[in-house]
Length: 258
Image (tube, rainbow, N blue to C red; front, top):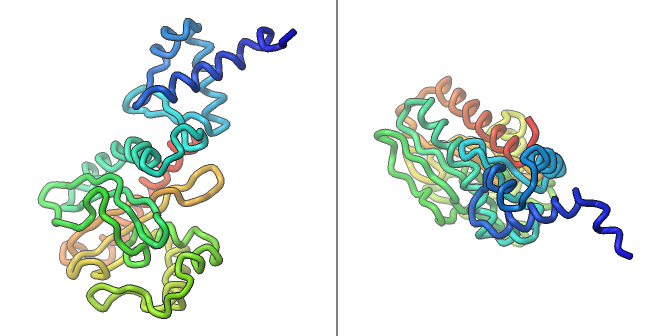
């Protein structure tokens, strides 16, 4: 005789996962309880365990829950980017709102040796940037890319640039070799966030910081782009700290910690 009827918590957990997998967006706990016929207190308890184990993430603004990247049903890169964008967008909006500066906030993910932009929030009178959703740029030229590359093992960074004697550059700026990139990434790790000044677009600068998953892997980065003439060194450092705080908030959402 099967033992499965004796472990209703396991059945309820799987039922919650199936329900979340079938939905395109996050689901409130009250909806989960109603549709599955479960006590709301039990739903909260089970979700807390699944969040602690990294299978479910919380969407605070929606008062709802969704599957994390650990679940294979949402493992494709397109859906992964959509999930990250949904989690990050409220943080980007808050970042732009609190800074009260003409900046563009964006979310980027690594795709090989490139970054792909997955979300974007533009502040009042913000500069026109190339960071439209879906645009790809060389990771080593962008602040978001450098933030993520800085958290990868050196061997993995080398694997992304296997045969390139010289790195792609724009405006004759940015690292020209792997040696220069290594130095730049070491500076990024020491600083705590990445910077670029005119490496992508002349007269524009960016600050970037990476969010990580439960294993410490850089899954996405938060970036801010601004006109260089609009800030001094102290102001740019404050922008770097702000973007780092926002990246930490995204990490907390991804991991269910903090």
